[in-house]
Amino acid sequence: MYLCILGNFSRFLSPAKIGITWTVFWYIAAAGIVYYLWFKNLVFQKVIYYARQLKLTQTDLAKMLPNLKESQVVPDPNKTNLIAPLFNFPLQGLDILNTKLSKQATEQGIKPFK
Image (cartoon, rainbow, N blue to C red; front, side, top):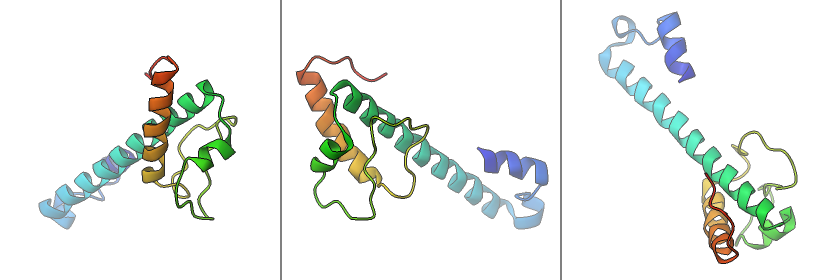
């Protein structure tokens, strides 16, 4: 979205300068990146919500993940997180945690994440 706004104001992505094909490509690429980051942040917030409701710690979450690399930092539910860890924790790990925590939350009668 910010790239689209920047493109409109600076005329960086003007079809007259780079052609309509590249303009469309860059707008679609920017929209894809924004959507990916929004989706990753949504799954992250869901994982943190369920982890807090289940009173899990960062260590508990790390035990749920197979093949965790040393460079990957597992989210800490006891810490305030405004956005998902963008580069040091993959979406695949969040998806695994989301699946496991959603199942546990359903079994314990915790309200679904909204």
